[in-house]
Picture 1 (tube, helix red, strand yellow):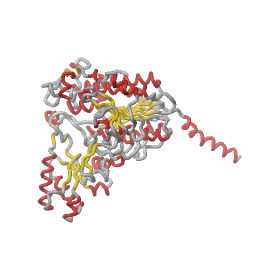
Picture 2 (cartoon, one colour):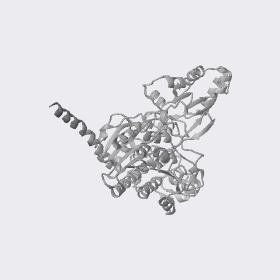
Picture 3 (tube, one colour):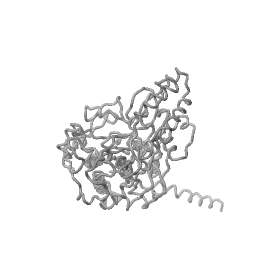
Picture 4 (cartoon, one colour):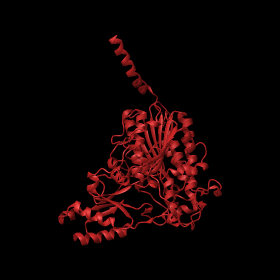
Length: 543
């Protein structure tokens, strides 16, 4: 009797494990990041979308409606790194697109690498790698678990949008080099020459064909979800006096970076989708039962957003066209990989604020912050208080770096100087909060902004003071817009899961960007990225 009971218990305990081990994995995971996509673009433009793009993912997948970044700064480099590593800049180290290296007294670029060579061009645009990112991605972990049999490929117009998501062990990352070349390129970090399929794509002339007229996709009078076309809040393009439709890109190219102009229009997303499809075919992604990973970033939305702003006809047109790109990619995956054989998630790397000048015209508190004037005031205060006007080494990314050589020479403590500077900064208009290095290193913040700053604070790379300006205020020209804050317009991003093993549904429960990578890792049964701090979103998984 006792022996029979033991055998029964063993069978019960083994059954779930067996089920988990034998469960089929998707043949391909496609991680889509839309650069500068606010969550409300999904709802604002919903009625203009077709049935096979965003709506297909929402209606047949899982929609996280209250999804946020849990750190600052909300920039492209940190955003892409955080999505795929499952952690924040405090751990993966990508604290900005560019940042001040206090040990070398110079600025560094998040993907820049002088130790590699360009492949596909002779331009420095190819001297890039993921070497500044300190942690693995889920693509890296998939490569490790499959003994290198599962491929990882990164694709984006922006180098950082291709390189950081793909990770360290990727087979390749490809990005677009415009100027007078219009080529997809890579670096010697990945290979010594471009594969034939990339050469064929570059030789096809597809990229160059997008220098054409940009006119509204539909009758512009139906674009009721955005402001008037001609207004005073948009930059537009050099060579055209007004920022309104249509745009003759071929005529405007010479004054706007030649083929780089394509990036700043929705045709850059068209080009990205075409290259991604070529990558799936050329690399045979999803063609066997060992899971491959494609990271796909649509960058043109960010260029358009910076130029024209959140409320522009141009941004609405760009998202209506992106909806068609998403539909095209999904239909291609159905045909090439097989319907029900792949998983796609879609999110963003940050949001964006309405043009502050536009907000002011509607009596909403907003405006512009003059960082240069603040620096002059702080230097003057430092000179008067500490009898030294050389204590500040650098101010960038809302951070202040002190000159430690001067502190040592004057026998000044970091805590005393930062405490007094913090008090002075809080007296300044439009600065709402200030945090010192000491506070961020020893404290555990539970309030919204303090926690976000701490999650984005890297002890080795970040500064000695971090300041926060008021909501609606930006350091930027008085046209177009930007991002980077910890306020909802920058942190609230879409998160959609769709495909094999994905439950249908939606939730308003708050979730975070760092949860995406652990969710994919759990789905694939692989190790979480090595610095992951997120948790699997169990409601999305059919387990």
